[in-house]
Length: 144
Image (cartoon, rainbow, N blue to C red; front, side):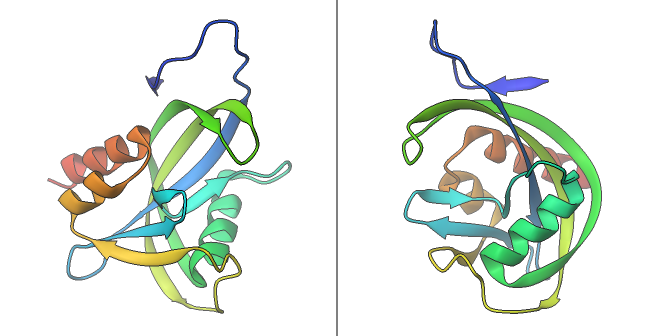
């Protein structure tokens, strides 16, 4: 598996699996979620007992209020991170899926998350995590 970031010696990095969506609109813009901590692909952590697609449906609904149709998983990569909010180190394992919006269901429950649309190049510039930038490049390369 491709890894991003460098782990610090002597620090334990528990694995934190996550599922993330690459969602493109008809204008070929990519969906990002903007928060006070940065910009991210829609999606997030898998809870105990959840499978990847169930977690992705839940996370996107919480962040955006939209239901999605999930396609195939096209890439997996990890990144070593420090979560300031938790004061913990971990290795995020990202499972990346192509997806489409399937309709607005409700207002987002994570009210500090804003859905924004950016060109592919702007998306790569704005994303906070390198493994998500890589995933967009992979999705675009496989579409060509």
